[in-house]
Structures are given as C-alpha cells and as structure tokens.
Image (tube, rainbow, N blue to C red; front, side, top):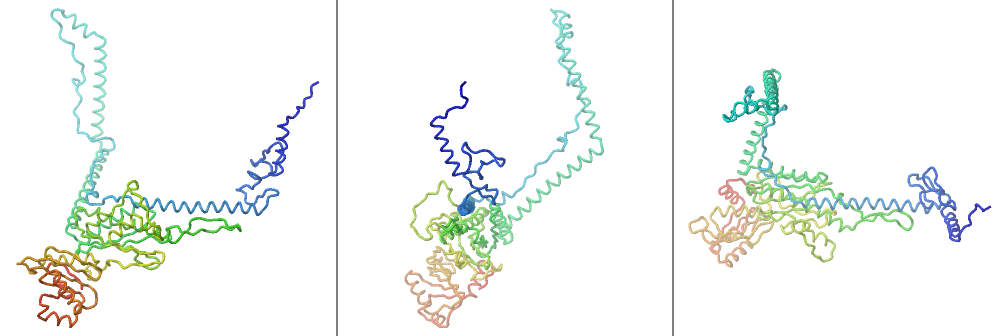
Length: 546
C-alpha cells in the first residue's frame, strides 16, 4: 500500500527552514502567520511585531521599548510637519486669491430690476368668452358633385372617419365648456378674489420698493458726482467691504475719509496679525529621540507677511479705482495699520489718479520669473505686489516683526484738514489748484517731498500772476529764514524767471521779512499761513487749517 505521506522537495525544505528563521525573528509559526480574532498575525502587532497604533498600551512580546518609543516619536514628527506644511499651503492659496482682479462695485452694478411674479395657480388671464361649437366642429362634407349625384355627399356623412372626428370634436367642446364654467365660478369665489388681490398688492409693493431704491441710488450718484463727502465715503466703504468679502477667512477692515479740498480719499486699512504667517518650517527628530521644531528663517517669514499686506493694499486701491467711474477722485492715500498691541503704520502709499490704473497684478500665466540676486529679502524684492507698490512710491516697513513703523503719508482726521495732515501729493495738488486758478499756466513740479515742493509756472500778461514764476511751498513748522530767500532768488535767476513766490505755513523770520523789503528782492513775494488760507478760500471756496 502506497504511503500517504508526501516526500518534501529540496525547495520546500529550504522554504521551511526560511520560515522558521522568520518566525524566530518576527514571532509566528513556521507555516505562516495564523489569523487571530484581532485581525493580525500571531505574534502581536499588525506588521513585524509592532504594536497596534490604536492601542497605545500594547507592546509586542520581546520588543524593545526604546525602539517602540522612537517609532511613535517619528510618526508624531511626521504628522506635525504635515500640519505645518498644510498651513503654508493655505497661505499660498490665500496669496493667489488676493491677486485676483476686483469686481467693480459702481452705481450701475447696484441697480435693481423688477420682474413680476405670476399668481401661484398660473398667470391671471382675462375673462375668456364661452366656448362655441363652431370653434370645434370639423369641416363640413364638400358639396355633392352634380355629375356624381347626391350619393357622394351621403357617403361622406356616413364615413367612419368623419364620424370619429365629429365625436372627438363634441367631446373637446364639452370639456372646454366645463372648464370655462369652473373658472368662471372660481373667479366669483370671494376667497379666490381676495388671494388674487393680495398677490397684486404684494407685486405693487415690490415694484414700488425697487423704484424707490433706484431713485435713492440716483440721488446718491448725484451727491457723489458733486463730491459730497458722505456719498463718496459710503460708496468707497461699500466697495471695500465687497472686496473684503472675497476672503472671509482674512478680515481686513478698511475705513475711508474723503477730503473735498484735494478730492483725495484717505483709506485706513487694518492689517492681519503677525501670527497669521507660519513661524515653523516643520519638526525634526533629534538623535536623543526628542521632537524639535524647525523655525523658519526670519527673513522668509517677514517676506511672506509683506507679500500678504502688499496684496491687501493693492486690492483696496483697485476697489477704490473700480468704483470711481465718474472720475471724482484725484488720488488715494492708503495707510496700513497693525493694531495689536499698539497701532503701528507698516505701509503707506500716496497714489494719484493715473497711478491707480497700475495696481492690477498680472495673471500667474502671464507673469515671468526673473532671476534675482540673492539677499535676505530677495523673495520680497522680487514679489510683483511689492514691486508695484514701490513703483507708486510706497513706504513699507523693513521688518514688520520688529514693528519698524513708517511715517503715514496723510492722516485721516477732521473734516477740515490741516496742512500738516495732507499727503505730499495732496499738498502739491492744493498748491497747483490755488495758483493755476490765480492765473498760472504750464505748471511743472521740479521737486516734491513731505515738507514741500518747488515748481515753475507761467501766467498770462493780463492775469494776476503775469510772467514766469518760481514757486516754493513749504509746510514745515519752522519759519523760513533769509538763507532760504537767497536760494529762491538764485533759482529765479537760473530759470530766467521774472518773479519768485514762497508760500510758508510756518511763517518767516524777521530777517527774511526785512530782506524781502529791499530793492534787490522786489521780485520775491512772500505768503504766510494766513495768506495761503485766504488764497484757498478765494480760489477754491473751501476752508483750510494752517
């Protein structure tokens, strides 16, 4: 009788020895892992004898506790690093969304339209007349052919197809008649009539509300075109709020103050907290098995924050430019304030009307990467938003995390601004408007700064300011001395001008006044703060505090 036990081949015997070796290392039978009720091979742990991650207290038989703790620390390090990278990815997505163009929030986009809603049971139709049989009767049989005789007409009347058409027509007429009687009875129902009347009154109220809203919108538009501060500020803040709503996870309130004197809007933008930018690059496992954070370089973190605030500033400038379809604004001054723990101005820009058109960022596909020189703030220097702001003459904090503040271009204060509260652009516009209305033409600014400007202009022979003039306008608190008048006289000679004018809100020293009274300085004219305010009220009809 044949032996039922099979002889093992050399391959099977080698595999058995290998299985025994694996079992001795990982824990398990020589024939392979046996399933256990927990779902893992015998020997403990899902793989290789490691404990189940869901059971922190479980340890494999014979496993080294130090190795197990190290594995857990490595896994925790990986998860923490992934969380930090996810925060960095969210920041990049937020920067990309802030670069999108701003939708126009002008008066036309706020207009409402009325569309009537039909009665719930269908459109209200006029009272229909009673259905007549003539509207449903089929065509009569044709007249009998005299040659064919009366038999042909009789055959048509007795035709089965004609009889079916006649029966269907009678049925349709009866149905239409019943429907007409039902609708007529429903129209006479008091409840139905009351419901239709309520529906009509509601529609009339909707139409009236839309009409009144559009009329008030037109009134606001008229006030805006006349540069009334309340109307201009209301429209600007609506546009800024609509732009802010595009990123609800990043609140950035912006308040607007309009100055009719210079037709300039001053925007105060609240910047996000410094902690919004991730401060860590990840986590690493030290040789001792400790989890250690890996901080980001301070320059990289500062560059990311500056990229963020630059996009917020450009978005606010774009919103102001998009809403001003009537050309009321001559310029916009924006100050970016970090409110916590104390107010610090980290960004300020003074942009005129022409500069506002250069605030839109290019699309990602159109932007070209240019290799930049290595440096601490190389990423910030190459960022398109920061480049655009610097082209507008913006002042940006060199280190926001050190709270290095910059001087605001203008202050949004009282309704009647003081000269010191005006931005350099506003002060230049104010001086130009006053003197051009006084008679000067061909106005050209040669030098402009926060303290004042130097410009030239030419007046017609019959004007109040005839000939060529060199104008110096200063608003520093100190008085202008004799040395400054000598400099003005030299500039008049170099420009071959006939006259010089110095406007100073701080006044003049006694030496300067005595020098201006001499015969050699008869071509130099002086105007102090009171004189400048009088010129403003005379030519512009608006008050000014000097």
